[in-house]
Image (cartoon, rainbow, N blue to C red; front, top):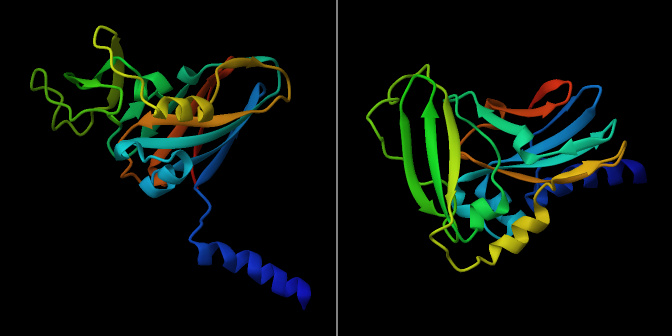
Length: 214
């Protein structure tokens, strides 16, 4: 009876506290295995970081275990949405809360570019994009890609959020076999997505692997 009661407590307790297991997935090949969980809810993101980043980011928590010595770069990851075909690479801490002006552009596979500069420090997430040439809108078959450049000529005071992001972000480094690497990735994407609509990619020396969140 005691064991049954303990099991019921384990099952019921998370629902009483409002905690829930985030949608997760797994992918692997001969070089690496990756477990990841996705967070699109602003309250969940705020509980992790102390800020919801303005509600403009999807956060992915990654645990990566290399099977060989492996160099890991955040730019090797990508997140894609089935809803509108948007795909994006993760931002660094300085791109989110740095002291320069970040210029973000969205490129459509069907043609056209939308762009607008935003001050990175203290302003969370991409700007409201305005069309540069009137193209790329209304084409349902187009895919959207985010591209960024940094204008260091417009310096701003260092944002205190930088320290938190740098502490929690997935580090870029060379890892040894079976040496786990974990951290967060911050994707500039409309978080009003269903996790099942998102596909997560990682490029490895033996090719790109992907996962779905369930």
